[in-house]
Image (tube, rainbow, N blue to C red; front, side, top):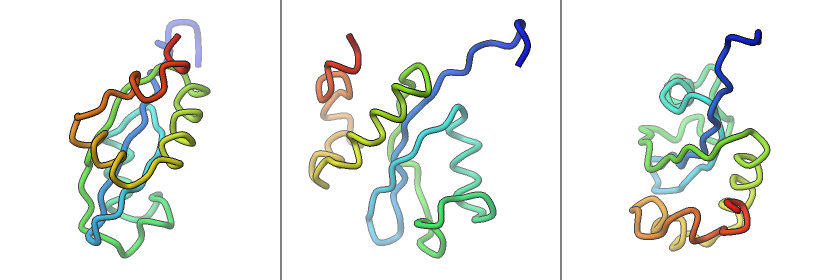
Length: 101
């Protein structure tokens, strides 16, 4: 990356499987990553054979470190809380205010 390249904005996302399970990941390009998961070539092993997949939710969070911290925290949440996050009933900053200070 040279000095003219913009700093990428990292995002966390949730993908819903055919069996209604939620997968959490991080990326700098949610649409590209979702497409990779759908094709299976560069997608997560967890999602292989579990399609059709739908992008349930995503949020830009800033740098890679913050995205990975939030991914870990989201993975620890219960399914009902993840569902509330996906339905935009809970804000990510409300769930983890320390990550947004």
